[in-house]
Length: 397
Image (cartoon, rainbow, N blue to C red; front, side):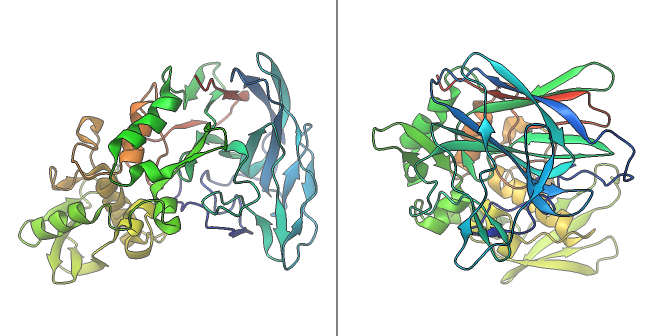
C-alpha cells in the first residue's frame, strides 16, 4: 500500500526523497534479496529526441541520498550550498525510439526521471536535492519535456507506479514480471489519450484550461495538477468551493459514515458538521477528531485542513474524505469510501483533472491526487519477489 503524499513544493528541498516519497513498501531484512533487479526501458514514444534517464533516491541500506548509474551502483550526493549548487550529472542515455535498454534497478525509495531532448537541471541545497518545480515559471526545468515514475525496491518486494500527483506529462506505463512468471502493467493511455486530457481541460473552462503548459511552438509540455495550479494562480482558488459548501450543508443534518479499513469493517467513524468544524465520533459517541471546513487547495493537496498524520484515526479518516471530495461522491454516498468508480466525478464541480486522467487510462487507474489509492484506484504494480521491471515511454499520439 502506498503512503500519503503531497505534490512536491515549489523549489522544495527533497532531503527525504524516497523516505517520504510516493512509493514505500514495508522494510525487510538487510540482505534477504539481490541488491538490484533488471529494469528494461522501452521507447515507443515516436519522438526522435534523445532521452536522458536518472535513477535518484534514498539508498535503503545506508539511508543516504544520491543516484545510481546503469549498473545500479550507488553514488551519494556531495554537499549542497546556499544558494543551491549544480548537482553532478546523474544522467545516462535512454533508448532511442523503437528500441529498449536494460539497466539494473537498485534498492532505493525514489524516482526514475526521463527527459526528452535536454538534460534536467538538478541542484543541491544544504538540505539535499532540489526537485524540479515546473509550476514555477522561473524553474530551470520549466521548458523541458520530462516525467518520472516512483518506486521502492526492498527485501519485501517492488512497488512501482505511474504518477500524476504533480503533473500529467510525457506518457509512460510501468510493469513487472512477478516471481511466479506472470506480468503486471498499468499506466497505459488509450490511443490519443495524451491530447484528449489537454483538450478536455481546455474545453472544460472555468479556469481549468490554465493548468495546460505549452512550449513556444504550442506543443503541450504538461498539465499541472490542480493543487499546483491553485498555488501558482493558474486555476481559481475557489474552484471547489461550491461543492464544499453543499457538503457542509448536507452534513449539518445528515451523518457521514467512514469505514477506513477494508479489513476492519466494524471500525466506523461518524461525521457531523458542528458550526465551523466537522466532528467525527467513534462507536462510543466520543469525538475522536475534527476538521475545519476545507478550501480547494486542501482538497486537491490532501493536506492543510485535510492533514493526514500517520496514525489510526485522523489520518485514515482524512484520506477517505480527501478521496471523496476529489471524486465528488460525498453528496451521493454518505457511506465512504466508495469502491465503485462509476459514480466518481459526476458532479459539475469536481476534480476535472483527475476525471480526465482516469478516463483516458486503459485500465481506468491513475495516481491523479495524493490519496487516489483509497479504494485501490491507483496505477501501481507490486510483487513480493519480482524478476524484473519495465518502464515504457508511450506514444504522444
